[in-house]
Length: 129
Image (cartoon, rainbow, N blue to C red; front, top):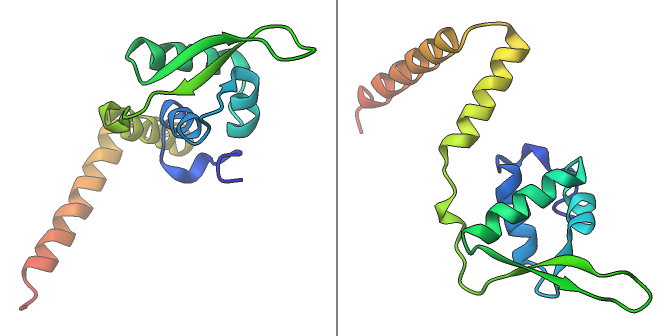
């Protein structure tokens, strides 16, 4: 399954939840989404889905199923686009992870990354083409 514990895909949890819901027009409840995405605790799914519904990316609706209590299900909204997710959150999360893992400061890591990028750009621009 493409969603389960797919943490290395570069998507935020909100983007991952949105994409999953788009692939399930029958609707998914928060427990289903938590299980399929591997996002814990389940309450985080409730918060993410509420945020998505507030900006008309998905629709949340109470649904009853035979033999079960009513549950809120999340449904895709036709034409809803994921493009409105800020890309900024993804790089900030990665930077925070690097700081935690390496023990270095954000400033040091960003300086090193910019230097590496500058060297790469200069090297590519000096190659005759």
